Amino acid sequence: MSTLHKVWTLGADIDTDQLAPGAYMKLGIADIAQHCLEGVRPEFASQAHAGDVIAAGPNFGIGSSREQAAGALVQLGIKAVIAPSYGGLYFRNAFNLGLLLLTCPRAQELQEGESIALDVPQRAIVRSTGERLAIDPIPDFLLQMVAAGGLLPQLKHRLKTPLERA
Image (cartoon, rainbow, N blue to C red; front, side):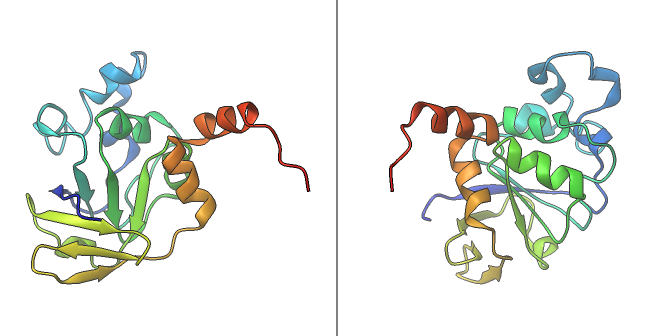
């Protein structure tokens, strides 16, 4: 838990077109990621670092089913998104691609540039002051998917691992 993550803040209703703008959907994910959030945070893609987190308002990832919206954040190395709620399709796409989503009613209390630690086993975000913000529990199978890097890497690993006999 001791790893610290820089917070990027966003408002409510960040939709999939803001995360993966439609004008770039014909490009590969590395190129799409360079345009991630350019309409609301033009500097985001060029200044985000691996391990950074996003704290946003409700309804993060609403909109279309484009998985590139989660893929762009994975490509940029974003460790997690923290929000009070998510678009349903985005929620599933994010975990399938290995992006950790933390549901936290108090996500918007986090400050731009703040350093936080994620204590997922204890269901908390830990601020530098020691204050702990509660996060909703995440099913083990979703945490395992994130740890594996997403659904496809997880399935590939399972295919390589011999089945244990009862």
